[in-house]
Length: 472
Image (tube, rainbow, N blue to C red):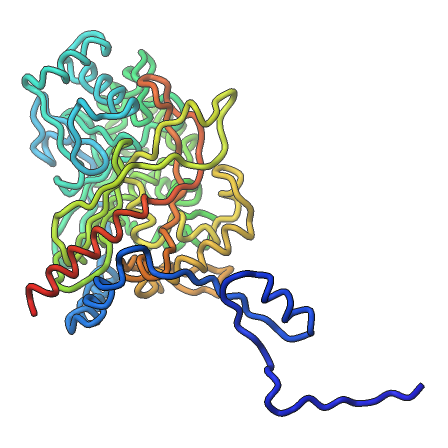
């Protein structure tokens, strides 16, 4: 038998791009032709006209470039820790919460539980259970989103006047954002728990931890949170559900000042043990750092960039640079993930918290490729994490070179969620999240992955299109 060399015609394809049913890609691959499988979907239903209108907007390209540039110019510095009454002007009976606006009648179980615990913490009621009647009556109490006061709150996100908060500042502009201190995991207020151990911990944070941190941060000088976030991504954190390296770096920066503080050695040791044993402690610095950057991108006419994603346990809302403070909301979704102990899907509340501000900034679920160990906490696989980080680049405007991801050849984190790209591709932002029990008082039941309701992006696009037509 003699071998023959067969020459393919010069017009033979060297590779084929396949869109749609995978059977066609498989058939081509079986003929020894390289195939590039392209995930493509038609635009979201009903968005074609609005996409065309916004695409033709002469402001859009430059507006998005400006919004991203403003975001990337921000340097978030931790400059203080102080009570919410002092920083935000909160008075007795005033409470902040995560997500878009909501009233007590529609509040989810974990949000109700956190408000009940906060009311007892503030002395409005002796027993948290008695707070239900207080909030139902609406007498001498008010609810307001954290975002409306330049703040963010994880999970239920409840903030009351006596709670101490981190203060983040951009030195170039003097703008500030705020977030409460992190309580740890399990039965904690932000997950809707309000038992005696929860209130005891909150009182210790008010009387010991908050003042100690306030004194230490003031003495240590500003801590560069933006730089820590960049280092975290190279040390296995993604800054939403994994903050181990960030917590240790924060401790490194303020530990000397904590030791030199006026507090007793016993109190300092207790604070070290609490912070060192709480891998999520830095989350409450990462969140306001992200908000500080994203707030700089607000109010750019024509920009289609998302500047906030937030959930209150009932509604999921987004805000967009080109539409001001308007919320676009839909039903919060149930996360798909891993559960603690005997808990299961029937025990979980729909998604809740302002912590999706991390994904809005390009980290968290967008940067899971930097933190493969996160899949052991929220579910999925390492290849899923890599694929997610790559996929998020399809719906973002640019990248943040200060936050490089090693496994993606040090490409910057995907930055600037684009409403038009989401509507055009059908790809929804990926969020990794904790799961709160749907019954008030239960606390955390698991962690997992979730996306926003698809309907909110066409709604935002429609408003962008309306404004574009009005300008024309």
